[in-house]
Length: 224
Image 1 (cartoon, one colour):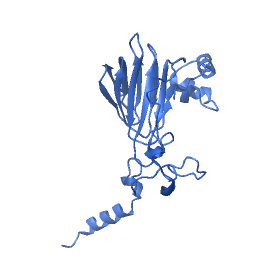
Image 2 (spheres, one colour):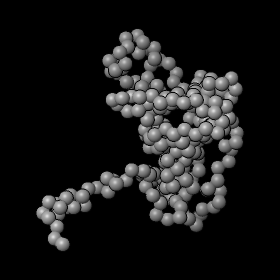
Image 3 (cartoon, one colour):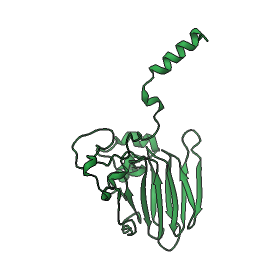
Image 4 (tube, helix red, strand yellow):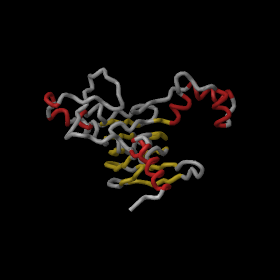
């Protein structure tokens, strides 16, 4: 059956699109595994594969996630990541993990993961969690989670977790990227290096110059 002229043009246009048009997640592996060579000096989009002949079972093992993170900081929380950097066997598999410890009323502050969605399960204690949708609605979704509860944070959206109890809390987060990335909002906006031009922040947040100066002078803690 002959194709119409319009359909032929459409097919040509689709074939001409870059391959990135159909890639929405981490690149898939093309072999059984691609253990990261974390000592390589080669820079590329991801991590270089280790010689398979040098791979051992240790490359697929991470120990110590049973140990609580140090929450004696201004946020009262600590994230222990398990990405391809910490566990080389995760390279190209498109997943990672993190343990999040909370002191009483500790906070994992508003942040985003630009390359991953997150699914969180509460192991101990109770957490007040939420995320905000993108413009123009900026709708806030919140829930109180107890032990065994699971909550999902969609990729790229600002979200947070707060320990709303008198005791310690622990959660495990799984993320849909070997390197999800973290952008902590306050740190990025008011703690950038070099600082963002104050007039930009004054206009953006409708603050006076003195308030912006105070915020930029603060120490913005990184709990990762």
